[in-house]
Image (tube, rainbow, N blue to C red; front, side):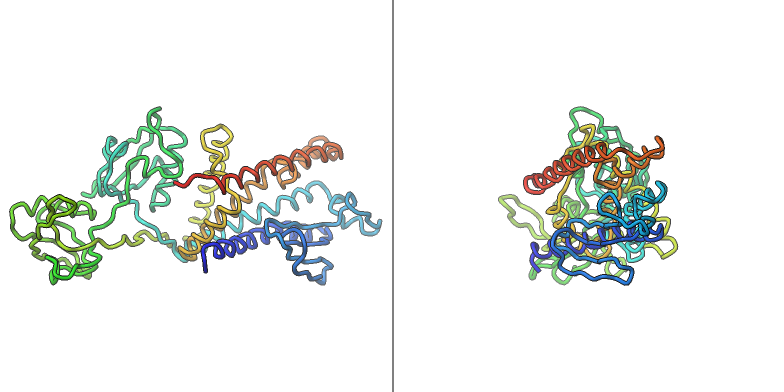
Length: 444
């Protein structure tokens, strides 16, 4: 499947799942409150498939899958017979109308928790946040190769993804940040990143690069070149843990250690781990010309780093983990919205369907756990966005009903219509910005 068709497919799958759950929340609570549901539509525009259920609801799958709606009996939109008025949405008490409108976002919130629970049960593979060579801001702050990031501020960083999010948030907040690390020697120390200094510029898209941090590639043998010094001595999969008495953590350290130790012209004693067993092998490196420079070579290439940090929990332990992750994600989304409003974060963070499709395809290619995580983030974002007090969205309707509770009577029709126009203009502008970002956002 090509990237284009894969992106389209996973976008349709993602939106189909999220919209269906959102609209089902409205539908289910409406039925519990005795409201007649006329239509349950996933998508807008020309119907591609319809069916009328035993309850009289018309179920529709429409051509444009960028949303959906539940149409209820409402005498503001159509004439309702007196004997049916008790089934009309606007005839229900304001408390029931609030419950019906809030049910859609709540359904997305519950779906987010369920998806994260399933992700944790399956196990989400990732990389351990172990750093390789450092320079720039990180080097001046004392970071060293082999440092494992344990926490950024008060936020634990069990994986590279979590560390990236935490560093990005700290960079956008422009605050000096304590980072707890475990060094290659096993000691836990605190390092301070001076992100509050005006001269320090760190992008939210790639904080590792801008801080001078790189991911550590382990000193694991990938291939052994025929006829090389390592042939018959080393094997693919061997982890080199020391050159003589010099401990080795990363593949780059291995190259530097070989150059120093080989100066004496004697075979090197390499301490390795092979199939879980420790061993020592002797290798006599050979001097060769590499881009005009003499360099001692073993004749090996490094192996690609495996995903060595898996977030996996049992079914019961995954419940509090899913709840905690949902709280953290909600905090991140709300803080990001706040930063965009105050100008601390770029409006380029607003994405449209093109970017969502690409990310959906990329997540699906990484495995089911990563796709579930993507769906959970999207579902929670849909919940939060729909609760914003913007006319047309669920949050706008909830605002009207709260005003009705306070003043004792519904909001006037003119106010409702004015709010609808304002909401539509705002959403049109937001969608235009999202499409612009999709098409012209620079690559990082």
